[in-house]
Amino acid sequence: MKFTEEHEWLLVEDDHVIVGITPHAAEALGDLVFVELPETGITVAKGDDIVVIESVKAASDIAAPLDGEIIAVNEALIEKPELVNEDPLGTAWFFKMKLTDPDSINELMDEDAYNDLIG
Amino acid sequence: MAEIKHTPLYDFHLSLDAKMVPFAGYQMPVQYPLGVMKEHIHTRTHAGLFDVSHMGQVILRAKSGNTADAALALEMLIPVNIHGLGENRQRYGFFTNADGGILDDLMIANRGDHLFVVVNAACKDADIAHMQAHLSDRCDIEVITDRALIAIQGPASQAALETLCPEAAQMRFMDVITADILGTPAWISRSGYTGEDGYEISFPNDQIVELATALTAIDGVEPIGLGARDSLRLEAGLCLYGHDIDTTTTPAQAGLVWAIQKSRRTDGERAGGFPGADKILPEIINGAPRKRVGLRPDGRAPMREGIELYANETDTAPIGTITSGGFGPTVGHPVSMGYVETKYSSPDTIVFAEIRGKRMAAHISALPFTPANFKR
Image 1 (cartoon, each protein chain N blue to C red):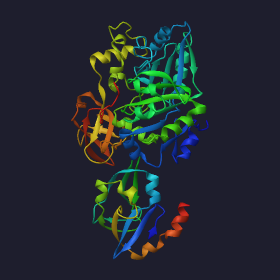
Image 2: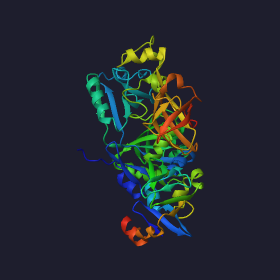
Image 3: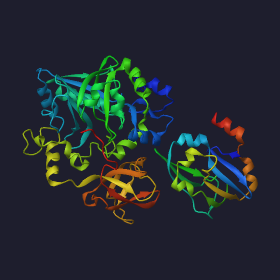
Image 4: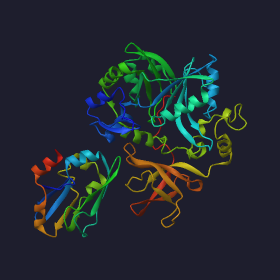
């Protein structure tokens, strides 16, 4: 698993990556009440805000971790945003994307580096 | 800059792993490990304990020795029948300003030999200065600093509190008593800010941890933070000062005319005599140009404070604004309150909010979103 400084995790699956947010991020956000997912098929650049998440208190965004194309989104989160708080590393993945440059994932942090980041 | 303050329950909150945030100059628990949603639901199904010690507690005593004189004095600042408030009864009210707007909302209790007033934390200093400026000639004003304030709310509140205070069970909604808890006199009202049955308790600072510990030790009583306090009052359609009511909202616009008893209205025995009466009383008769309403977003996205409202998807001139909004864990959907031009205020009228550049529909909704459960 790889991690971004914005507390996203990425897991390689076949020819694409699965993306979610870490338990640290989910805990900091508090109970989620709303998730707005991107359209599939869109091309995104690293840093583009593509998911809107709202906790009880505030709205937030999740950005694309790398350049690529969104190939799937997790519709389960629309009905049950609280899944993110319950299972952020598993069933509460947000989207799957095909990376423009499959090697770009190597620039990201590994688990040890992420754990150092969150202290 | 003033240092942030702590209530006497600060360490107690930390010991329960509360997430603390600054609110009205105090470090307050926004949630405990249970989380906002579960704390909210727990309060409506069992009982929740809230620290509200940041609020202001003030005692007014008539210099004449006759509490009726203190009541008449306070009526000069508040458009409510205080003179007719029975002994050991409490009433909701608000300070008004010369423009007919609201300076703060509060509770007033008649304790026989004095009046007991509880004001919002954010307005505490201004409210006390306001009372001192206008009432000092007729009243001795004592700011209570040695007592904490807690609230226990929810259907299991009575069963919980009566294990420590049997008299609490006999109280009706808006009764106030002094009764011993843990061997010490507590000032208890059967009231709250959640739409549920419950009590608010004023208790000495040096024993409040003992009381809070005893209450949370009772099966079914959980500590509840400000996050859930906000979603509870929002579902209950209750105003939050500084958001749903402020110096620009009149009682008629805010839907608070029910709190202005007949005796203080036009043709009443003590009509007017409070700031802004010349604006407030005619508006009660003639109607207000805008009204506070509930809003139920059609989709799942919350509609939050500050969002503008429109009559349709294309008009550029707004017809209202959202003043409070979020998610209602008990009703299971987003809920909001706001103001709209009166002609759009009927329940089921469709209005549009602009969120992230898109116009999203909402239906005007009657308030409260959840039924009130007061012990009448």
